[in-house]
Amino acid sequence: MNNINGQTQELAEFCRRLYNRKYIAGTEGNLSLRLPDDKILITPGGFNKGFINPEDMVTCNSDGEKLEGIHQPSSEVKIHVTVYKNRKDVNALCHAHPVFATAISLAGKPLNEAILPEFVTALGVVPVVRYATPGSQELALNLLEVLEKYDAFLLEKHGSLTLGRTMMEAFNRTEILERYSKLLFYTGQVESPKLIPREEADRLLDIGGRSNLKGVIIAGENNL
Ligand SMILES: [Zn+2]
Image 1 (cartoon, protein in one colour):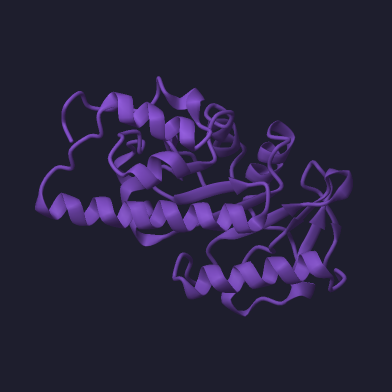
Image 2: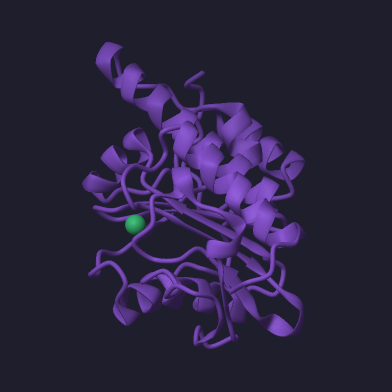
C-alpha cells in the first residue's frame, strides 16, 4: 500500500475536484506527479476518481512499472512516462474527458486561432494528438510528435491532456481549455468568431511567454 503523504493526498484532492467539475465521469481520467528519482505517482486504473483515497495511488518507476500500491496503475501510464521522459520542465499531468473539449476533439482540429486574448496568453495553441487506441503505445508516440512546444493537447476522439510544473498549474490549464471550448461552442451557435489581428496576437504570445508559437497561431489582419 502507498503511504498517505502530502503527494498522495494532493493527487486524491485533485481527483475529487476534477470529478466535481464534471471533467470526468465513471472511471475516466488519470493524474500523476513526478516524484524524486523520476518515479511517478499515478492514479489507479478502473477507479471512480470522485471516491478515491490517498492510499489508492500507485508508485511506478520511470518506465511505468509498478513499485508500490495495492492497485494497478492507470492504463494510460505510457502517456505519463512519455511526458516525464521528454519534458523535464513538467512535474504534473492531468488527463480528463471534459464535455466541450472532448466534443471539439471529435473534429480533430487544433485550437490554433487567435480569438480570445486570455486563451492566447494562457495556452497559445492547443494541438491535436492523432487518434490511437486509448492506453496504447501508439497513442504515446502520437503525443511525442507534438509534445515539445505545448502545455495542453486535445486527444482526437478522446479528451484533454494538460501539463504543469505543479498539479495546480496542470489543473488550471484543463479548466481554461474546457472554458474556452465551451465559449467556442456557444459562439458557433451565433456566428463565426473573428480573429485577433496578427500584431496583437504576437504581443499576447509574448506576454504569455509563448513567443515560440508565433508562427503556429493563426491571426487575422484587420479583423477585430
Ligand atoms: Zn481518457
